[in-house]
Length: 211
Image 1: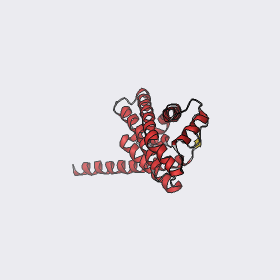
Image 2: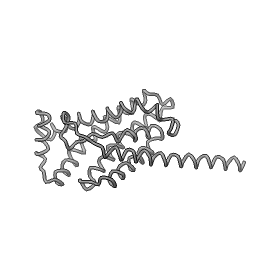
Image 3: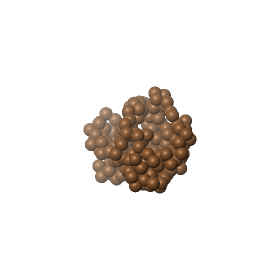
Image 4: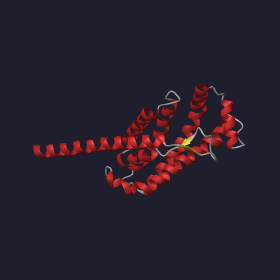
């Protein structure tokens, strides 16, 4: 009996070590990807950048669960801060963490709470995460991020509205900026991330913790 308990303990310890290693590796990869960003000029002003850092986070969340996804987000942001620093006194990095969790946690919960863990549940989870993150981005940008960026760079809110109008001539107010810039940008970003993960997850999950 004691040998069985010992074997079970060794298995649990190896599993825990493997999970920690995978979280660290996926977080580091996500941090590197977070450093590689580029604008989408047809959707948003250049200070909104697209990156693919949520891909490894979402893959890890599907494989290991929402708690692991949150931890991968933490590692991602820390790697980004160490390698690139911050120009917003951490405000933008905190927002990135919040948006990332808002995206991957609902997706992971919906996917893993269904025992079949089918592609249908993955799609439903990613759709829920995309919509929730877009809503969170609207609120955060309107009441926190744009005022913080404006203070950091000495720019009034009207300057951001003008930048939005240069992309979409229908932008005339903060509400218009949120509706016509923030919403399309985030829907595009997280939908693209979801599509990529949809096609790659089943192929690479064999090297991660099994379902």
